[in-house]
Amino acid sequence: MSQEQPQRPQAGDPIKYGDIFNVSGELTSKPVAPQDAELMQSAETTAFGQPQAGGPAEVMQSAARINERAGVVGRDDVNDIARDKGVTITGTEVPGGGVITETVAGQVVGQYVQVPVGQQTAAGVGNQGKITMGQALEAAIQTAGSKPVDQSDAAAVREAEVRATGSSVVIPGGFAASAQSAAAYNAGMIRDEDKIKLRDVLTGASGGLPAKEVTQEDAEGVQNAEKWHNIGFSTHPGATAARVNQQRVNV
Image 1 (tube, rainbow, N blue to C red):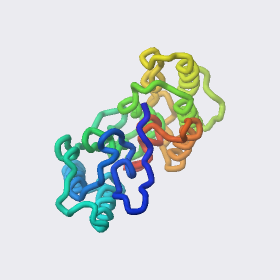
Image 2 (cartoon, one colour):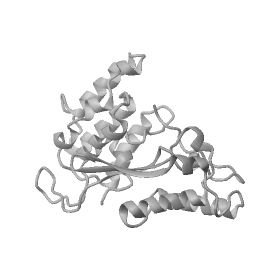
Image 3 (cartoon, rainbow, N blue to C red):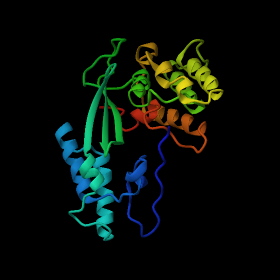
Image 4 (cartoon, rainbow, N blue to C red):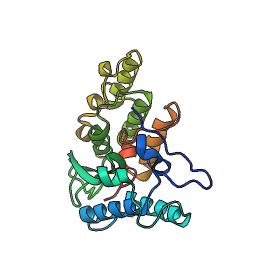
């Protein structure tokens, strides 16, 4: 269910999509071409009014420039998979905001939660343009809701709940307890269709957790909790608050 981790390019090799993004299949081995980056820059400009600082377009442009200087791609080169399958930016509504997803050839290369500026939290306190831990967790349903819950997910949800509540005690019947129970149950199941999914344990998180704003420290803490409980030390894009929220904490 997880995607491949980016691989470090060897000296003399072109920078490929698999080196800079968590993608799989044919796209992984494709060198990043200048016109691919132009397509993403155009999409971001159309969607946001300008390319996003630190976003996929900027990352792709940097990789494409290096590849062009190395002579492995030309200025007018474009990958057929990017040209034929397209570069897209879509938005999905979630409680309190939306999930913005950027794709190349149907594969996610960028994703974050966006909250309208000036929007109040359920608690009615400031939090203007900021994302709560519950919102970030529930947003994961939009991108990884069908993923069976495992121990890395349970660790991430527990870390998120601890940071949201300020208490290290697992709440009976809470989201962390439910995720841990789901992970234990799933460990005994063979078929994915028989396993409990993330959507089953994260639904309602936006309203069920205190409206604690997500900081960069929170995002890193949740991501690390997931990583250290996952064989291979990889994370599932979109599966935790960290992965959904790490690129855009303040909008």
